[in-house]
Amino acid sequence: MQKNNVVMSEAERKSFLLNKIYKILPIISVVLLILLWFIAAGAENSNFPSPQEVFLRFITLQQKPIKEFNLFQHIWISLIRVFIALIVSWIIGIAFGILIGWNKKANALFSPVFTAFRSVPPLAWVPLMTMWFGTGEFPKILLVFMGALMPVVVNTQSGIANVAKMYLDVGTIFNANGKQLLIEIAIPSSLDAIFAGIRTSTSAAWMVVLAAEMLGGRSGIGFLIVRGMNSGDYALCLLSMVCIGIVGALLAIMTKYLERLVCPWTIIK
Amino acid sequence: MDNNKIKLKLENISQSYITKDNVFTAVSGVSLEVYDREFLVILGPGRCGKSVLLNMIAGIEKPVDGSIFLDGEKINGSDERIGMVFQKLALMPWKTVIENIEFGLKLKGMNKKTRRETTQKYIELVGLEGFEKSYPNQLSGGMKQRVGIARAYTNSPEILLMDEPFGQLDAQTRYAMQDEVLRVWDAEKRTVIFVTNNLEEALYLADRIILLSKCPAHVKESYDINLPRPRNTTDSDFLHLRKLISDNTDLAL
Image 1 (spheres, rainbow over the protein chains, first blue to last red):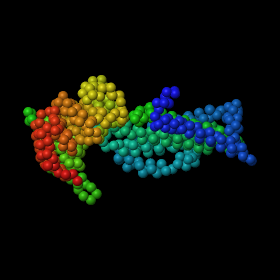
Image 2: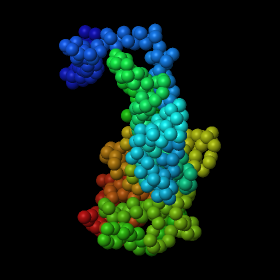
Image 3: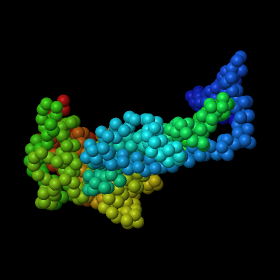
Image 4: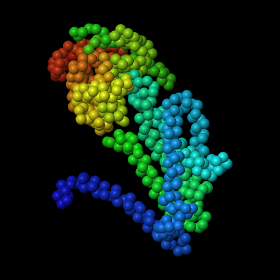
């Protein structure tokens, strides 16, 4: 160790220090946030729940479940809705994006309608969905699906439509037919764009599911927030919010790893 | 040339593009013949339509006028007997070195085992052993260009087009790659059409140099280069030819 320090040059020491700082800064921000939370909760006449109260609420929720589910089960129920909606939206969204990105006629046919649909937020569909399908599982999943579909379609379409001509020229030189140009060149070269869509759709799905659960239903993390609001149980609301944040971050990390798995060339430099 | 069989013939090839308010002519009435197993260099000032000419031979662009004959038959569009090494490499970043090299064979529907056997020969020929599973962005400029050359050769084209393949390499790598290309050409005995704007490179490589004019490009002169290989760039014959061609070259704007 001592020896190592001697060998280190000025530049090396600097980058070593910088790396340390980059590792410490995130921890500092989390600690500061919790500290701020303590201060805000400790203020006079504040009914803002403190971190201890939120933690205690977590323990009670594990012991006394709401609607027969404890916290983890509620989170899991929300996640199941998200996963089902995501998988369906990825399959349909990528297929549709490839169609309108590759085929100019299909693009001319579908684009105007799709662009108009895209600007209607999923939550605006709630009244119609409720009228048609009630408040069960299906309309919730459908809402999440609609929120997740748009980013996948848009990103896939732009990726496929903007394949570098250079790569297609290589295909032409080797006498590739249309199907080979699409499968061997256009789709793989768009994978990073498609994954940008997948990342956006995952975070969108997590937001829409919470909103959908807040509008009606008896389970899920969004339901817990409404429950807390209606019974003045703000510790429950905050507890749910913390969980939403943590799960959202975990989902983002998971999609990142999925991308590395599917597109290994993007990380190697 | 000991073998004077005409491999490829361009007849009165022209290419123009419609711009905003004008018609831009890049190539005008180029006719030339390429002999079998010849190393032909097309030399011209920068931005004079050399790449356009090569793209038309490759079938990436269609000429507005003129015809191209391969072995006496007229060709339209790309032909599997013609391969190309691209100026901008055009290696696919999502494919490993070996997947890039076997790309042409894969498109032909050859099975994986036969493909790998054929590819291995060219990997060895260009000296890429050990890098088969690397991705292009892990390689140096010279190595990437070797992948491009191996990819073109693996498809066994009868004519290999090379579009300023070494333009982006540093001088040292460039010299090494020139020798490499001559060595591979010597081993494979294919016809090569090599485009460059570098006179020294042209003289070092060519059996014959076609000098193009500035834009719109037409054939200005054809020089037979009968210097023995390996050539010495400071040799008096070499320098004499260099001066001769240099004096006849249009300045690029």
